[in-house]
Amino acid sequence: MAFTAVELIELKRDGKKLPSEGIEWLIAAYTEGDVPDYQMAAMAMAIMFNGLDSDELAAWTSAMLASGDTLDFSDMSLPKVDKHSTGGVGDKISIPLAPLVASCGLAVPMMSGRGLGHTGGTLDKLESIPGFEPRIDKDRFREILTRHQLVLAGQSDTMVPADRQLYALRDSTATVPSIPLIASSIMSKKLSEGIDGLVLDVKTGSGAFMEELEEARQLARTMVGIGLESNVETVALITSMSQPLGNEVGNANEIRESVDVLRGEGPEDVTELTFALAEVMLELGGVHGGRERLEEAIASGAALQKLKDVVAAHGGDVAVLDDTSLLEVADQQATISAPRSGFVTGCDARTIGVVATRLGAGRERKEEDVDHGVAITLLAKIGAEVSESDPLAVVHYNDEAAWVAQRERLASAWTIEDGDPPPHEDLVMERIDRSQI
Image (cartoon, rainbow, N blue to C red; front, side, top):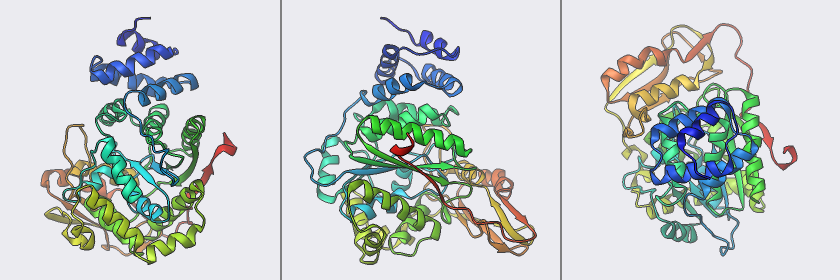
């Protein structure tokens, strides 16, 4: 049966079901360049409004996976477990998490992405390390994983190329917050890695793509279901993204904070979530010891050394991990101050993420470069008591005009009220595994 992009777009625009053969043709044609970006953008928007049913989603994910190479590490004796986050502000968790669990006896073939919308990307952060090269072919991927039990790679030209192209397109066409597009993007990448287990960090709250808890549950169940159907044991933790994770939002500054975590000196929330996800990864990999084993890997320096070894394997300058002051910092600095005294009851993650992006820490067009030195350092988060004129954040930037345009927006991220401090909100809200599918 012959298809055209226009006919398929019309079907989904009108809320009708896409045939599996049509999906296979569309993804293959887009990967080959026979379907242009503007037509795939129209399809992505139609999917965002009308969704994909379970049959369509299975076909879409399968077609994405079939667009390129897959990896096979069945000959490796170590359990192979990975983690993925749906995206957040200040979410640098993968950077301390992956070497931590690898140092405890798991193989972690991690393939990460760049920033989407107002959320940061692991690859953009890693590339703030001078010389770090995430783009490697599958032979080099295997070589690094075999030697170090960890690889921190981006998608090569031959690994799930359809997702790599669509990922960048969604970022620049306001089609990121779509459950089927998020689920198929994440799971096609992860299933291509030849893993045995997968833990998903599904964010909810103002800074997440799934702002409502029920939306996050739906996304988590969708992805866990895809994983289980593919014989990959998959667990999702739903976690709060009502405020940024940690104290740093940017790229190079988030590397600094990640190193702090591996030194046992990181912020409480980043450390808590890193350990929570790590415990699930050890569980999926059948590695015993739990929290005690993870704490020992931090205390002994094994986890930080693992990060150094893998950064060196990717061509990165390990000196900046020994002395993080060598990492890039933007030239100009400004401070956001409290307009009144009281307790911080809101520190809006989305607003802070958008400002960081507009200052250059992220992309508004897929061809843009990232300014790794742009940084927002949070000095007061939810629950903090502040006095009038106390600093709430320090901002480093290079583009004066962009800062002038974003200064008031950033100041609006904080809500300060009289009375008692706000109630504590759990960072890890729910766990979804095969028992809920």
